[in-house]
View 1 (tube, rainbow, N blue to C red):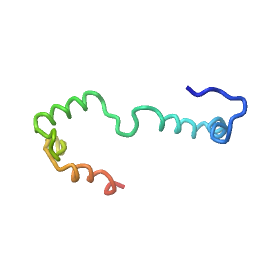
View 2: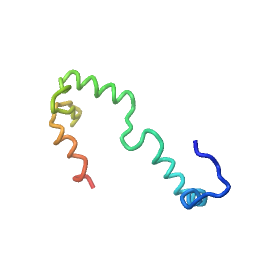
View 3: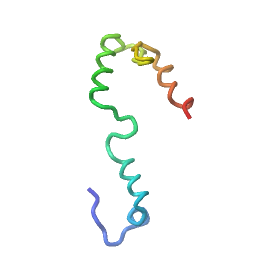
Length: 85
């Protein structure tokens, strides 16, 4: 845990005087983050992965239009990245 200091340096003094920036900093450094999913989502996804037999293969579970399919990792993960701006 961070301790209070009487003589803060640049970063600490910046976050003390900029509440919006400090809130974002705390949010960014908190556990969970951008790709946090609920436990129910993770349980469902794991069951589908078992059912489709993707463990140990180069496949990933993809849920599209409400249906689960085994799909190439490259295709499934590329769909979100640079294409989605």
